[in-house]
Length: 94
Image (cartoon, rainbow, N blue to C red; front, side):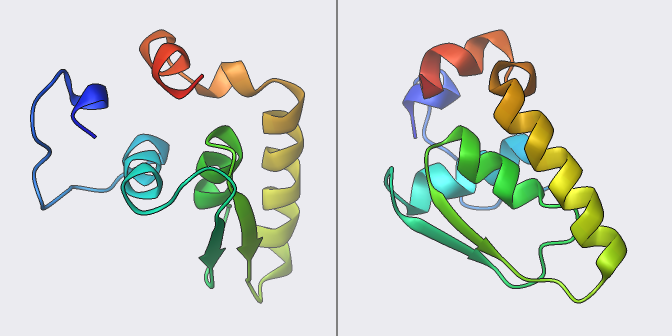
């Protein structure tokens, strides 16, 4: 985790707002190939991070509109994953 934080120890309390903090959580708690479970997946931000980090994923949601949105987002990520990473992240996560 220090590697992606410019050599500094990460704080133990994170503010979560989007995909980057989710990536940090997944990196800190899983290995490549592990399974990530998201029981309230919404628009699948966690799934985007899991795909980018080579993790398996299971998401659950009851709302059709969220599942439709999730499907569209995932199709975009699969087509062009590099568009969802900043330049620095491409080097770390590659």
